[in-house]
Amino acid sequence: MKSYWVLSILILTLISGPVVAGNIADHTGQIVFSGADREAGAADQIDTAQDDGFEADIFQEDQAKQSTHAMVADPLEGFNRAVFVFNDKIYMYGLRPIAKGYAWVVPTFARRGVKNFFNNLVFPIRFVNDLLQGKGEAAGMEFSAFFINTTLGFGGLNDFAQKYVGIPLQDEDFGQTLGSYGIGNGFYLMLPVLGPSSLRDAVGRAGDSLINPINYVQPWELSWGGRGLETVNGASFHIGEYEAFKKASIDPYTAMRNAYIQNRNALVNDLTGAQTLKNSKE
Image (cartoon, rainbow, N blue to C red; front, side, top):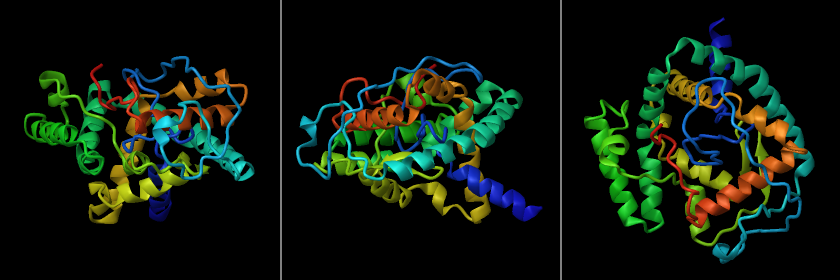
């Protein structure tokens, strides 16, 4: 029985939730359908891209000139579609019911505190990538926010810096850093359990894992348990969004691929409105 629960935690913690929606509010800043956190069960209509035209983008130079429309090579489409279906089942029959039950039991203010705590904990990812991108001012604000939230915010449970000081933070990751160096998306990947990605962002995810404090928590059961809590807690704020996304899409796989690449290109190019705090004020 013990091994069963450990295996369950391992599976759930890999889900960078929501799973298939590609980490709608992921701490590594993959795809972000932003907005104020919703109460459990609320669903907003999500606009999706319908343009099926795309072309090869294998590590192109001068990414700043790329259109924000979804254009990416997808040579593994057959495999990616199979993984998409697999991820869909994991979310619909695994993470979603658990997140709904969690949201029913845990009040919103407590869930928001948990979200703030984990967002503050992964500060090194944003801070280091700001430095690697030459964003000195942003790195300074990240450090200030981390100090304020850790002290006045009771270990990060309260986003004091954003609410009361007005320090704007940006969602940065190593995938964006590689993009800022002129490295293109490569080809599209649908990762089992982890959701949509690209060759560049898969490499970036591995880089970010090296500076993610959660990965160094001992014993490993506590580390994976924390990741599981972070995943379920994050998913509890977005119940219904993925379902609305699928319902609004003629081809959910293509719509997700296009939305993901469009969002990532916008983040790399620092387009207005693309950068959104995961823990923005309600």
